[in-house]
Length: 268
Ligand code: DGL
Image: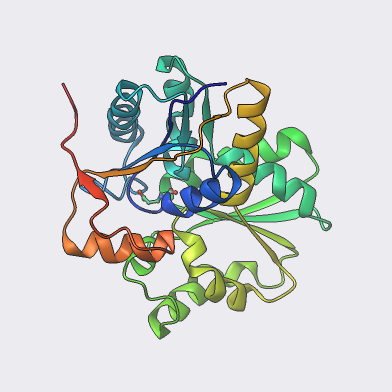
């Protein structure tokens, strides 16, 4: 039993799609979310910068005495999860392995598509993890950098998003994929356009639900579940202009108005 909060962090507000599922799966847990809205996007940056930024976020949460760290960002999870695990005194869960496990359970054709930020796709983490479990799998990947600003602008049903999706996803037409991993926590917002573009026969996997389920399992296994009733959910961002509130509500599916606390990083 451990009543300390769970720390969850992302390069911005995309990770709120994961928080939403964690709160459904673990309604008695306290959480502290940190989104680096001042420095997003990470997905177009190099390994060293992403690692440095990610460590700032992890250290902020560790100082808050969290009992578990959830990296609700595919880019950070693919580039430097090992570094975060190394410095963290508490267990760490990223979003890649839960999505990989879900895709392995789902595919019948053995051909899996993955979309993500340029950093995530260049890391080849999904291919490596999928093929480690089943070397016969075929994995087709495409980076979709414009999906992040389109999701943030809330262009969920817009002609511009349809056009961009058509262009990015054209390689998935008739190439045998039956499962597509949305390897970025921003992409669930664009789920319906992505589904329309790749067709109804392709199952879309996003990491939010499988990560929340895995977290529940790990908390139970490590005897870290919370026992108290009254919950506290805190949301920190590194920059909070009006726009961030609007976008955050869209990702979280609820009003965060007045709830985002602004902090400066790194904390000395
Ligand atoms: N949320 C990030 C991810 O899951 C994407 C945004 C970014 O590029 O920082 O990869």
